[in-house]
Length: 183
Length: 155
Image (cartoon, rainbow over all chains, first blue to last red; front, top):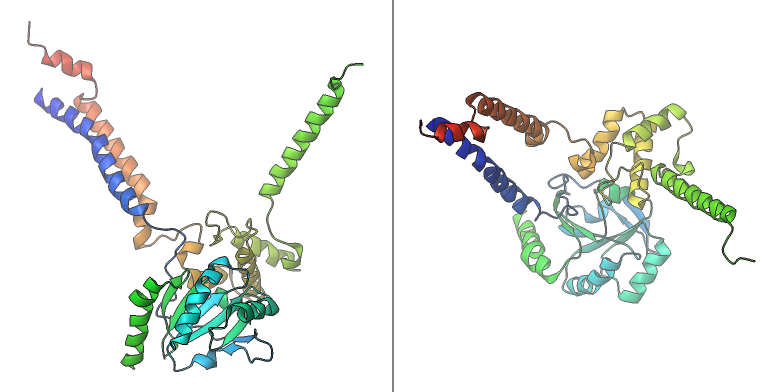
């Protein structure tokens, strides 16, 4: 019976087919980094907040400070190694006029102040979020993370991990330029 | 006097090692909730722990926040308790974290268009495989012996 021969051929090809489908799925699936989650907050308004100071004698950082401005809000901590790697570049960007604001996350304000004294202070304003309340509202999973917020107070982009020259030139700088031009 | 440890001492040592092992095993299962986090209302606390078991620790990914000792998991546990104390339902408390971290925080993904394949996939595969098996056994193609006989010219 020729029919059964065809069936046999189909049956023997089935594992190959399954393998092919799996290979394609895994090829794409395994390239995704599970530690970088897309933010659900993109396009949503930034939460309201009022953080206490990090620098001695400072006023801290609140939502009103960034109203009507295109800004970067950088979540960092004195305990965070990757932030220390990012820090010199933030200094460079701040020197070039980039509007960077800081959230000192899960940190003793004194430790945060010490880091800024030692490594320089790139922030227009910086506040302490020791309790992690604002960072939780922002869906922060680790430091450093940087949020791009537009004039209307909406979150436009979330950079997970340090801002590198590639990220700045390729993504953040063009987005900031566009947002500042746009409105 | 022999320098070898007496059998009784060995047995005691073994018992100690086993006890230590069981104790550490037990510690691994215990929740990471600290006493100072707990709510005074036992009913509310029970709800908080139940919800916490369904929420993913976003920094340790395959642990729920009830089990995780990560500082962020603690913040999330406290937030769940804060929401419940403020009168939120279980679903509202979960939705609060989903709004910030996405569906990823839910250890049990919701049934929605982009998870249909995830939920239904296994059943579809089982169905297709079952149908193929039934079909193949009916036509007799599974048994190579059948085929061999048919291949034989009449002799």
